[in-house]
Image (tube, rainbow, N blue to C red; front, side):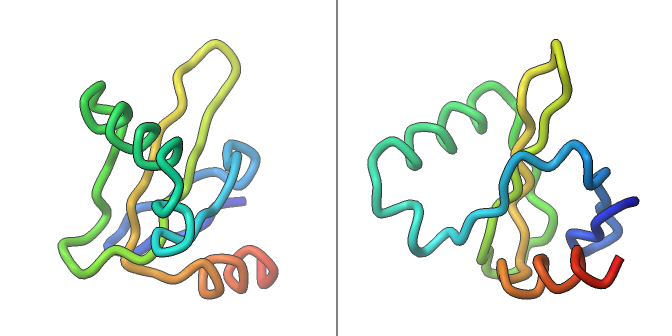
Length: 84
């Protein structure tokens, strides 16, 4: 199954490592460092140009993680997963 992240971007459910709220996680320095590193390594994908509310980390075996920055809240994304 797939999770729609907004603006036509979808990811496979089995590839999702975590869904995180930007407001609460970016308080920690380690989270900011993770996001900055992903952006520098071109592993961050901005789903929409609207105000970002969450980020989804995906990964597969033997591949680097990818970070999708979404305008959708974590609650909305979790509801979408539950409805699949």
